[in-house]
Length: 142
Image (tube, rainbow, N blue to C red; front, side, top):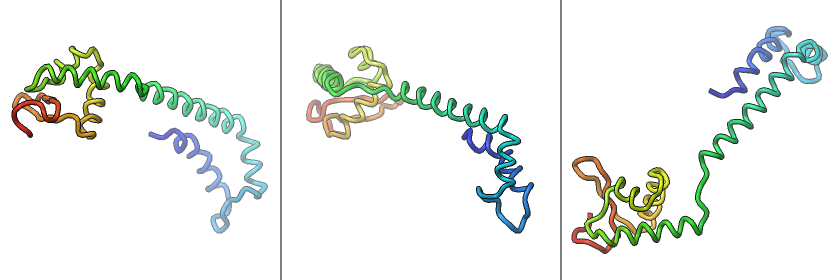
């Protein structure tokens, strides 16, 4: 749930119900400034907490989205292709993860990129495991 509407809704309610219903509250209205001055002990700390929350959220999102740089990604892609060439019938994702030493989420992201690039093919077995193989290697094309 967004933090800004939760923190600002009491201020909006005060400004809307405290004025004339025929006239909208504007920033040049003296009552608006008085409302801010009277409630500055609430407004500014709430604004500071909202900014700190957004900064913390941005830091958490940045740490989760940590991606590999190009050289490391190319090295892992080469390792994946070499490993899959050793097994023409293909490898399941857990076996490929243990063979390459990559985390499964990063491995699946790389495998999906390689499939979109046309390097790999995949199919799902009856045990709901994805089997990956190099395109052009092996017997059948799925």
